[in-house]
Image 1: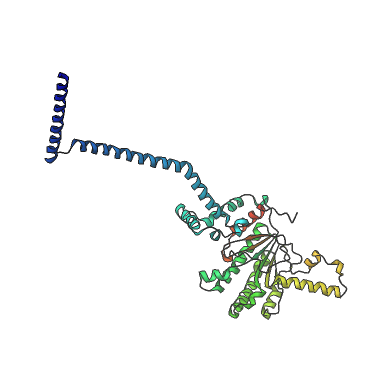
Image 2: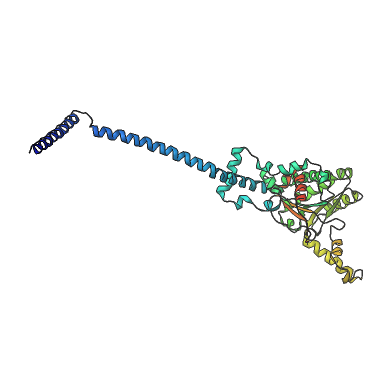
Amino acid sequence: MCSESVSTAHGAALTGTTHSWQQFLMDDNASGVVWMRESLGRQTLSQLEDVRDLGLVKSFYNGFEMWWLAGMPITLVFVLTLLSFSLASGVSGLGGSIRWEKALPTCLWRLRSWLATLAGVDFATLKLQQSRTATLQDMGDMKIPRHIAVIMDGNRRYGKSKYGAGVRGHSDGSKTLVNFTDWCIDAGIKALTVFAFSTENWNRDQSEVDALMNLFNEFMHEIVPEALKRDIRVRVLVSDGRKLPAYIVESIEQIESQTSRCTSFSLNICVSYGARDEIVGACRKIATEVANGETSIADIDEDLVGQRMLTAGLPDPDILIRTSGELRISNFLLFQIAYSELIFLDKMWPEMTKDDVHAIIVEFNRRKRRFGK
């Protein structure tokens, strides 16, 4: 009985206390005092925000650490790959025959250019750096090609780009030929054959053809003193001379006669030339000899045909070079270049330098010539 009374009284006291606290909180809240429960909630929320910020920092750090450990090596490999593409697109070989600016996606090629600008790298210089370094070594340790053939392409484009006139590019190209001949002699090369004017070039505008003939005539007269000084024999190889002006024919006869006794170096200039015409001409000579009883059919072989070619007496070219980035043979020395090493350069012919000659020789030594074996 007593315990029930005490319990009832205690419950009433608790109920009264609860009502008084509720009233207190309501009164305080009405007077602008923040509820204790709300204050505790805000403190907890602030702590949670601090924890969240710390978590973000840790996540960022972990992400950076993961990128540094995994992404950085991948990025380096990617950048080095772009650099290797740049280095490969220079002198020769696979890199020289693939136009990486076309093979790579545009975004990657632009990234490569941006990296070059950012790093201050001149890729045009960089891609020959290895070759230039090698040329500082004793050239006697390297095999020097005996005969180089060159398709001197890009003169017109160079002239139009630099002067606004294609003919002026041909003028610069003739000066480059003089310098290139000197560089070949200095390197120990014995013969140079260049493609100056093809049989198809007669189809160009007549004013350009006339300008080229006049330029060629001036070149032949101006080179004679230097040719005699350096013991250079000059030969002009013509497969179809029917369209050559008389004054050009006369100049050809003069320069060949004046340098006929020179033996140290052979400069062969192909004018009004086509390789198919040359082969047809050789066949006609052999057919005439057979008809006259001078040669039998059984005697006809590669050596005999080679002796009837315009390049008779010269070794086959070890290297065929074409400038301007074009990847064609263009009806040049088709019989003679069966085992020549092909090197394609992106620069125009008037832009050639002595360093390019050295780089070509280095590349020639890098190649493994098997001659079908």
